Image (cartoon, rainbow, N blue to C red; front, side, top):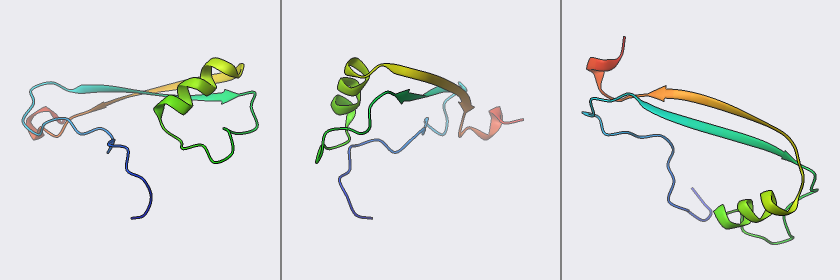
Length: 73
């Protein structure tokens, strides 16, 4: 893989955790053509764009996930 790694690999709860974890993913449609030219897409750039550009729409998806085989049905 190429590119900059920012430390997030996606949902990954401990395999032996006795809880089903809940993950909420939210996507936003902003009234902005793009982030600043040459800007790195990281958390601070996204937060800045959310503060500056009007939000046209948003949607959220909640997922439940576990690696513990005893909790899967």
